Image 1: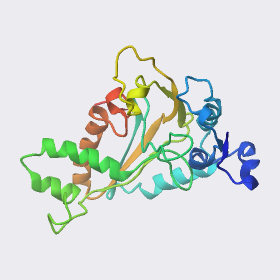
Image 2: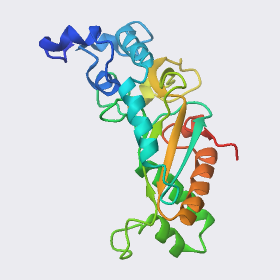
Image 3: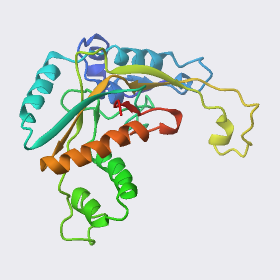
Length: 256
């Protein structure tokens, strides 16, 4: 039996909306939930979720987002204060995967525009990890650039370089793309005591991912920004960002 998960006053508007916010669709696009519509049922009842994912994958950046992106580029154009660069994904990106909704998949999107973004905190974390290895003999430099590792470690906690959220670059196709993952060991994952073997059948589960390019922006003293920008580029190329990196997601083609 299906369970309503959307207010009846809104049910008729969701399918008709032509410029839907991707974040709202991810969290509220499912109007009803039925156990039979789970994507891991062997494809027998996953059509409602798959159709919603297809709809999200068809979303194009709005005119408002394009103008906001241009405004952001102008606001960070001062090269004495900001260092920015744009790079394309080598494949696809999972960032902020959130399964706390009926769709059982999700992404990090901007609150206002619903377009993909990479939080500056995530970029700072992965870049600091690489810096800690390359500058292991200069921990004071790492602390200066990225801030103290703990709140009680040093007086200066925030770091000399500010990592701004990375914006998805409009004008190069659609941001969202359909994906499929195929878990093999359903009974094992459910904790039912069944062993995970090579004889288990893969079961397709529809997901949503990101494609295209992002604009990365650092703020701080130019010389230090150049150092961190190189570390960030290397991180994006060699280690990636986001989820499922061991499967090849989240890597960028920085041309290094």
